[in-house]
Image 1: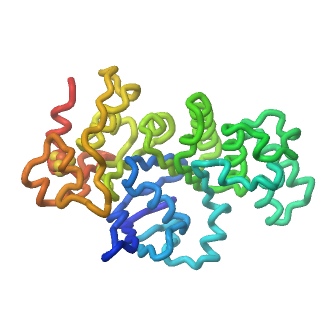
Image 2 (image 1 turned 180 degrees about the vertical axis):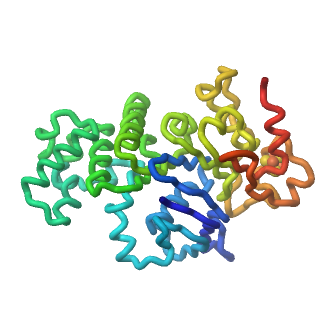
Length: 323
Ligand code: SF4
């Protein structure tokens, strides 16, 4: 469905451009959820925003973003607008910011349907269906409600209903549960998984939280300092991380580990794209770092079926894993 190849994004810096995203490549197959995970500054949100053309002024983009074979980077802004909300829909972190406080929920969810010329009655019926699908109880009675009358979880459900209104083939969800409390987070994640499975749509889920990926994503792309550190199936990556950064991420979340109940916080501070260390950007924090790591940037290489890693010593990492 979507192929990202060699995507690089430079933003203007104080004296020289800063490479925020560096040669990122991955694909989102049909009916599959791919998770982009990394700490703050890893470039995950910038990568997702590039897919829908939401980059800051002055951003210079290289590489290729192909949607069903069509190059998005060279598409006209009107073609991109057409795709956005129609074939590709987005769910943002803060539902309050995504909703217009002065319009009713029914009006906002029905917006895209009205634009497509459907009758008032058809739009009303479809909006009720969409709210119901998003898990909003008694949807007919909520059409005239305003966003401030909804809880945070209900607002995110309304945003999900809005995103589904155009029957998209790809849903981009950027930290969709971060602004919600823990019990609501789990329900929204279950809802997203159900919608993805039932509709057979593809989803790109951006999150800093490995537990979110474990629940929803079929495949994960682990990003560090704007580069891909590792990618592959979620189950394989959680079970046998082949990059020391991924391993540290997994060990920092005891709930996703099977062997240990102890959390080990990630050591050191994340590298920023503006001060990316030479060689492997993770080397100042890596317990396996040696001279080669400080001098030579590791390339993303295949280490087995559906597994890629950018570590010179991935085989050693795999050998070191607990029995
Ligand atoms: Fe660590 Fe070296 Fe692998 Fe980078 S290349 S993750 S520094 S072992």
